[in-house]
Image 1 (cartoon, rainbow, N blue to C red):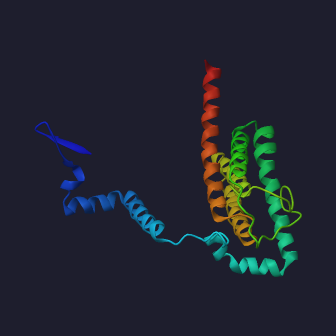
Image 2 (cartoon, one colour):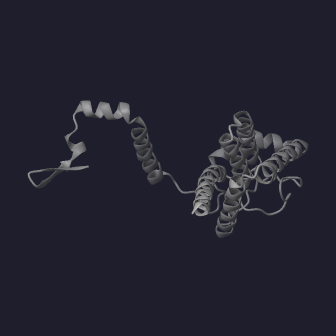
Image 3 (tube, rainbow, N blue to C red):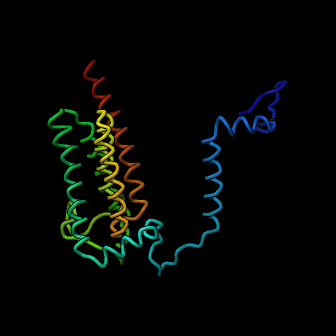
Length: 230
């Protein structure tokens, strides 16, 4: 904010702050302050961190955090198969809710439109930048939806689809069911990292993409409703 005195531009307002003003901002605007500190930290880390050599595998903090999970699954193929089956059940559940229940049974297309937006975008981005498969990947022939064959890493359709269903459940005040899906989504994320089926960024963007396209689908619905009322 620039203030003016006697027709001339003065200093930016923060240059005139007193210690009391700084304390006020820190107390009442703590989130921007926290984000500013985070921004400075990220700038410092990004400008000093050593790049991963081309001959080395990608570094993923989620892979580091789930090393023990990966060791257990690698040493127990049967357990890996069981978890893949359970994850496939969750995949069928989310599709059943998004399409069969929300759209066909209740006549609410927003979740279905969100999924169409999202998975089209995922296909474009996944094809545009094809990331290498981790050498530690633990596949399963019964993994949803296509089994142990090729797939796009970026971004996670598993996490995104479950998030779409959860958002719709919250919109309909099905809060307990939404919480169940959120918990299953967290467990699913741990499994995906443990099997090296996705990088951490795939999971984070999956959640963000679901929220973004849900909002976009809502705006699309509102636009259609306005056109019908004209």
